[in-house]
Length: 334
Image (cartoon, rainbow, N blue to C red; front, side, top):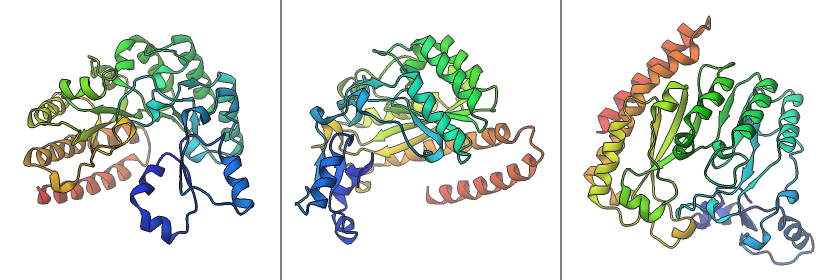
């Protein structure tokens, strides 16, 4: 077994035993998977859990093109991250950006297959494609998106980007948005806010925090799914209150805010999990605040999604009804 979620198997030993999983590989496997399969074929013992080290991480030229259409048209732009957040595994790997020619080949493979209609550009920060630091490269980003929009009729999304990268060059962000919005009403990405506490940010994610104007994304029809981390190490009541104040500041910004419990990964992997039993009244209040924020923006997104479509009225009303049921359920819990 492999993939970005393999860390979960460390905590699901019964699942591993039940499904007779011999070896779990965490990390980029290009340089290790061959020897593991050879060992299995030769009847040798396999490590139950193999963590790929830095020396085994593949260089750019060792990462092959995909050979079959990818799920949901996902195309990697590169690997690694330069921000160094302590709670993340990816920041422990070197930053490598793929040449545009490789990305074009994979997009062409997806499009020519006839099985994929859209494209999700994947990187830890799509806005930094081709950059060696935390400042976006205009020419590289523009060329990439002009090609992607030309080739894909099913819409474009980003896997992840950072608020800092958007804030560093809002004019470039608007330019990229203009290219994308030629063929779709809005677009989305996942953005990690993590906390509203400056003190926690300085300790755990010093290169992630940056002043920004969230309206830049709102005006350009990007809808971020913003994650918050609840229960970070050393979190205090004042940190939770500052995060709640941040969520309140974002109430007029079209977005989804998703609170997540702290999971010990990266350089924080020896810390304790945050568990439901540890939730305080403030934590619960923050979770409900995020839920109310998300429901507030559902109707607006439905309007954008089905605008100018003949069937829009019917689907819009169906989804609004579903959202109404969900709202009532949540408020009963509260």
